[in-house]
Every structure is written in structure tokens, then in C-alpha cells.
Length: 358
Image (cartoon, rainbow, N blue to C red):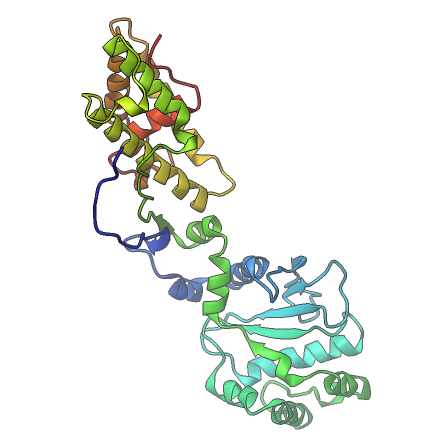
């Protein structure tokens, strides 16, 4: 069959958009409570792509009493060993993270290193939805040596947030401080956490109320592909019955069946686009297959009617009935397009669940 001519354009693939009235994720994180914030960081770290395309082997939430100043522990391997894990510290405050917020947490961290509660991490990430405040940002940006000096000075001089703690700066703690590169204290921006979280599309759009937006379907190829063979043969059998003589693909061009065949291939590819969308958004769930079950249950009585005498009657009756079905219980329902439900009839035929010619 000749392919219809047209302007070549770039297909718009599946993306995520906010439902009407839904607050954008970057604003929603400001509304999370501290527990939800830690759970969000946990999920984000689990999805994070590390250098080399790997992921953390173990990601565990430890926030709460006895966490030793580590809310999230993310290991590169199964064992918790020196320089082979990252520490994520979750701080959900109503303002940007200040030095008086961060320095006591850092002091707790170094005390735990001195006590050998856990080995030295590779990186220590500050995770705060309103970012690191200007003063702390400038301190961190001044370089490791200056940052370290200011932190030690604040501890010794019992500056804001460190009052009553000078005696805790023991030789063992100082040794732990000297053993850690202050360039490895890093702010973890919200946009990075959101990008990692979004790698699990299903979890991301359910957590934030973000609905998937279906992109453009792939164009129908000029000639039937291998995966179309079953339903194409079913259509050819219906044409053969109608004509009372064999009809092959080569016979369709210029025949009375050409437009019928072309239009039914088109709706097959509409449903094919829905299937691809389903796999993109629900990669581990058979949402498209559940929709096929719904359509099959809805059209089977129609196809089985005794009054339908020919394969052509059954094809047209099935497609007409499918177009009227209500499938709101399907998670794919909001993204249905005109040809999708009719096209599922041919997917059912392709699966051997429908036959047009008795």
C-alpha cells in the first residue's frame, strides 16, 4: 500500500504535565512535612544515576533517634565501607539553611565519625527545599580550607547554634575533621532531587499529581510489519469470504477493499501508540492488556450475534461497538484518542482472541 504523503515532522514523545489546579512539584516540596521530605529524598536517591550508569546498591532511611546524623544512607556496594557511600541530610525548614542550622549537624557528624559509628562517607549532601541560605552558601563557596576554619571557629567560640559544645571538640573529633575534605559537603539542589525522582515515572506522577501527556503516535508504515500478520490475515479472510475468491495483499491496491484495509491498519496503529504510551508510563503493569480485556468483554456479545452472517459484518460491528464503550476504570482512559478503542479490536484479533470468519 502506498504511504500517504505529508510533511515530515518530529514526533512529540510522552512527557508529564500538571493537572489543572495541581501545584508544580518544585512548589509542592515546600509543603511536605519532615517525614515526607525524607521519604522523597529516599525515593530520589534510589533512582539516581551515578557515574558510569550505575545506581546505589543500598539506600536506607535512618532518620530519627539514633540516626547518628545521617537521614539517608546510600551505599555504592552492599557493605558500608569508607568512601563508598553517601550521606543525605534532610532539613525541611521554613527558610534557607543557615550556618546555625548546618554547623550543629556537622558537629554531630564528626562526633559519630570519631566514635566510629560509621565510616567516612564519600559525600555529605545537604537537602533542603528552600536551598542553602546566602551566608552558608558563601561559606561553602569560599573553599574547603576557609569553610573548615569557619566551622571550627564557630565550634570553639560557641557561636550561634554551637553554644555549650566547645568541650565536645576533642582530639578524636578534630582528627575526624582533619580527615574529611570540606569540598565534600555539598548542597543537593531540589531540581536534582526532582529529576532523579522523575526517573520512576509512575511514582513521580502519582506522588505529585502529575498526569502523563501522550505524545505523538508513530506513523503507520507503508507496508504491514511482521507483528501485524495475524490481524491482517484475519482481514484478508474476511475479504476473501466477501468476494468468494482469494484476496491477498497484492490484490488490495485499486480494489474495493483498499480503503477499508488502510483505515483499519490506521486504527491498529492508533492502539499501538496507546500500547507504547502504556509501557512508557506503567512499565511494570499490564494496563494495556487490562484495557484489551475490557474491550473484549464489551464487544464479544456483539461479535457473537447470530444475525451477523459474514466476517465483514463482524469486523464492522466490533469496531462500531468498541468506539462506544465506556472504560473509565482504565488508567489509560484519560489519554484515549478516537481510533484507540476501535483499534484494540485488531489487537485482540492479533492475539487470537477474535476471529471474523467462522
